[in-house]
Image 1: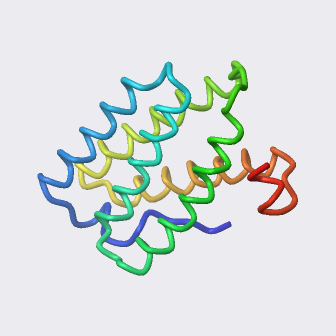
Image 2: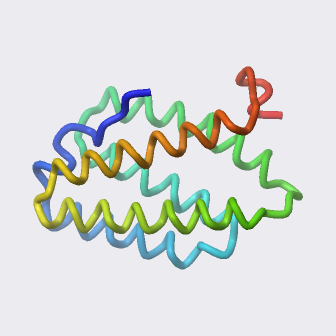
Length: 140
């Protein structure tokens, strides 16, 4: 899966956009101990990154995919005890989100893009490791 930071996010940013990203990262940090709240906060971060890229088509497609992933996450977390591995992955994702914002703020677009690629690839690997073969398996 080839995924890059949405065009424009790391190369052209505003103070208002950075402030919004920092607010979402802070909300995510506050939700680290609540699995459902954390998933929602991480989803809000991803949605904001795509929104700030300014590409309406990407925003629409991303929203549809996030809806599917949200349903799968809710089904997976309902009544489940979160493993230490899942907690560790969530903390790592949060640190990655915070670092991404710092790189964007510093104007380090190439580093931000590489970090985002690694992050999305790791998320893809985690979903694939879950063993779902179809969308219905993922949602069940």
